Image (cartoon, rainbow, N blue to C red):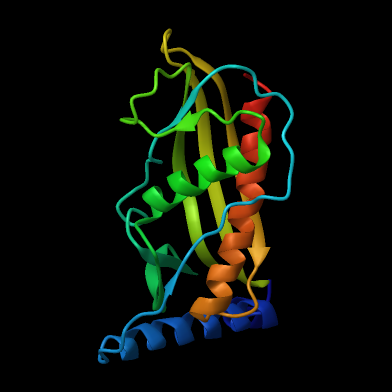
Amino acid sequence: MTPSMLTRPTGLMASAARIAFGLVLAFGLAACGASPVPTYNLTAPGSFQATGGGSGQLVVAVPVALAVLDTDKIVVEPGGGQVTYLSDAQWSDRLPALLQARTIQAFENGSKLKRVARPGDGVNADYLLVTDVRSFGLRITPEGPMAVVELSAKLIGAQSGRILAAEVFKARVPAAGTSGEVVTLALDQATDQVLVALVRWASRRF
């Protein structure tokens, strides 16, 4: 490998580096202002069908997330292990609560299983859906900004306490830029893909 290859970034790497620098600069400038932060929501997928869905009742727990994701802020990973947040956008609720609500709606919209509830709703559950948020945010890659959503799901028998099935669901959707509007749109699309796959996977096991 020649010295120039070691010191000169490729076009893709340079582009990613410029985007990351621009994001960090924007975050620093935004800290000086006091303008209200625009708020965005996630939608639940509705135009799909899932097979299965017997007579069991499902309870969807609040997803588990690390502190960096357990917030209403939108995560950005500029690279090099760095994690920061978008300065011009936030979610309408803390991410775990928002994902729980949209997961329940996705089951109601696409599955024959209509008996879906939250813990504490007084439902005698047959199954418990437990999820961990592994990734949920904008990742700056050599190919450009990418919305990345990754959830680990476990379906547990409520009476036995045994894990009946486990799966990891992930989706990557290119973002048209790094503004709050386009980032949240890409994350919403990635979430739809993950929730459709999750509902279809779980519904086959009831």
